Image 1: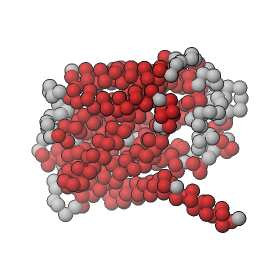
Image 2 (image 1 turned 180 degrees about the vertical axis):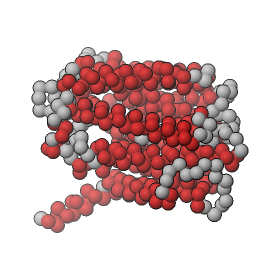
Image 3 (image 1 turned 30 degrees about the vertical axis):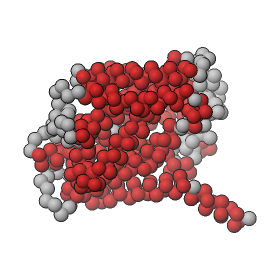
Image 4 (image 1 turned 45 degrees about the vertical axis):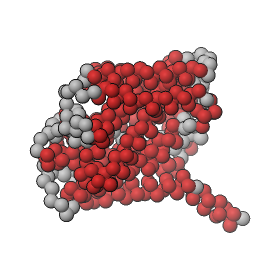
Length: 414
């Protein structure tokens, strides 16, 4: 099982990136307009948008959905970060079963301590910019430069290695990969509702990540799709190229180290983003200090950050105790469900619905900023269609309807 190959994922990734970038810009537009309604630049969280444009009941359902998806992703990142820490600690060595529990516990404790301390002293952004971003870029560059000499780039273009029929099932993962909307309120606040700067930050930042992904995808697949001696075996890893490369029995230890380190840094930075988004939305949910939750004020957010991590951390560590349970919990499958039914609803349907209400609704609302996404109703309608198609297709797939129909057709043909 080699997955979809190399040629078909980039167009699919570009589709997911385009839709999610449009969604982020629509969310920014709504946040700016909400600031205009209140008369000052301040924190406006996603939950406040839900309450404003979806009503009391709709806003509560959307808010619960957002917090639930955030919690699920925290659990995935904690588990993945702990497992990759285990790989780094025991790279190329035999490790006992308890070591997974230990590594998950260490990762959770370190991230909890960092987030609580950094939130207390209001230095999260500073540390992200001065440490995590440079460290991740260094690991990424080292991984690419290590993988490039052994990559069979000719193999990634071979038609025999392309499987476009499986790309559709990858869309939930692709949409979830471009879900960063929890930090959009912070971007809007920090850039003081400046439309031009916000657009530049969202489009420029996500485009940089897109280019990095395409390069990474090419060189890593080049190390697993080739027929030469340097090719990595997929056997026993479920067709996951990064898992195959991370197995030092089938790849160079240096490449395995850099791939594992990049994955660890990605899990850590993703976890930080989700937790910060959750914490700030939590203040909106409980109505504590919604007007200043992003400002430089002593507001006990560090306690919320610590308590936020505790439940998913305990679940992650507990799952590590049982090999049978841990092996049955597939993080990729969890992300698929979250992308198919969570991200599609929260970050495709709802931003389009709220933007429609803001622009074309019966209630007259002051518009502080002109639409940040052109083509009006056409774009909003396309978001509905994309999300609806994804939900219906994945719903039928998860329920086994397609497989049932296929069995009937095969039986009829016989």
